Image (tube, rainbow, N blue to C red; front, side):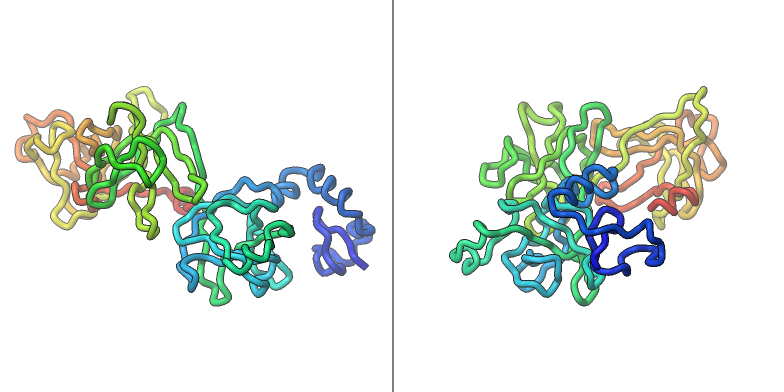
Length: 338
């Protein structure tokens, strides 16, 4: 006997949390009625067939990426693959009868990010394609996919990214085939106002208009899945009337962190925070030089050469070579969420 458990049809009573509960068992519904039930039983049940989640391929298999399979089974035939580093849209992870998490692609038309096997494409399999699945882990328990935030439009909240390679090419459109019009330099922190996922699975970020004349696009990662721009925390400030407490940061640079009276590297140091010391931060800014500086309050952690001449105290968060100088100390709640 087949029963419906939690909005999905399962064989036998093993799929139910309480096999002895008579109210949890009812006859198998026809396919159209079952689909209507999935949409009507709330967001949890219907969401598993909504293609609103994004994933990035983080494993390079024999094909150069992760295999796409015909069925919700890691041993089913392969119809193609998604290359390493590409981003695609699918469902939330769905566990099969073997306990393997897999995500379902939207069919019958596959995303352009999927590279079809030549023999499958020649046989015209796509005309009869009903399902397409990508495993989240390999049979050796290797992670194949990582969640991705997908496209966004930062209309209200600014989002900032740091360049972590030796120069990132800037293009006038989200297209790798056109020539670059400039570069984002190593260590620069730039504001991003939009992100798009190209049909081939490459993620492009659009920079704020103040950096270039006209649209300016950069890739988030290279075609080899190497990080190009990493998202960082943006600017914020705590006013004197704010109910929020200052953030706590720890100095992690072996030589300590130079303290300056202005948020720029050209300002001479007036003191130094020893490695391992904790300080309270009341403001975080992104300077016109595309660097992040923290304004600290005098907690006695910094050693100053002349305290009478010290006004505001600023320290850089990350060095120009992308090495951490100050890191935020997370609370227990924040640590649990991470």
